[in-house]
Length: 94
Image 1 (cartoon, one colour):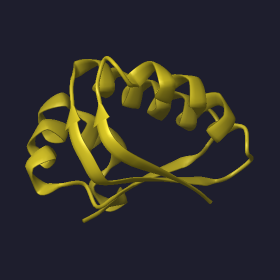
Image 2 (tube, one colour):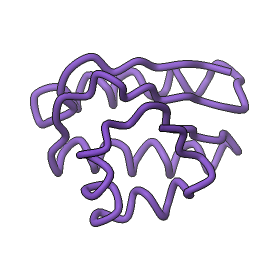
Image 3 (cartoon, rainbow, N blue to C red):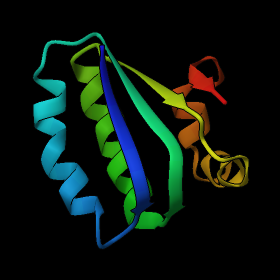
Image 4 (cartoon, helix red, strand yellow):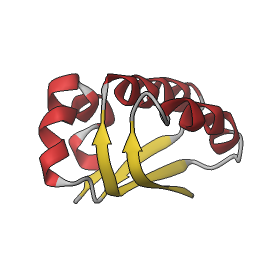
């Protein structure tokens, strides 16, 4: 199990850094990645795209993604973008 903590925004200015870390996160041989969003201040379309990329790569490697402590005000955006359905309701722990 690997935990990745977000502390601030996931937007065009930080999404590249996140994307650059993804191969390392996925290559650890873990079966589960926990994304802790407790301190996620904002997310834009570029951040959404980075998460969709992670989900695609995780699926190829049979890695489960769990979302922890997503701020309630961000939940609507996750539903609207399709991230919520792609990740699956059972993988959200508020």
